[in-house]
Length: 129
Image (tube, rainbow, N blue to C red):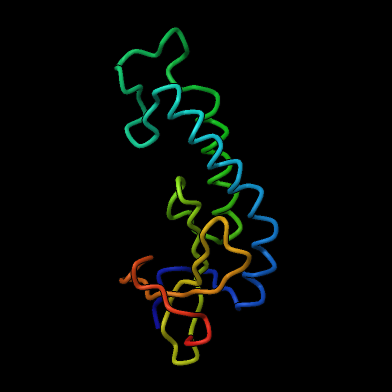
């Protein structure tokens, strides 16, 4: 069977890795807020006003944010939402279906999962996996 992701996590492995990822996600959210205050659009890679307000093209906070996203994704997790701190961990269900174990910043641990196509809105309790 062909999967979207090479790396897949057991629920236990994802929960263990989450402890390393939590502080990185907290910093990502903080950097996004700083960039918002500065008027920088991280998705368009430009200032909302169109001018860099005397700074170089990309603020240093953007470089740190990109490095954090790359660090999390190099561990095999997926950054799905910076503002909300949404992280998915690819997982294979017993029936062979590739799904995501889903965590949102502020949640104590991974308690939800969803199919690849449903996304966050389709979250179900991990007990139903």
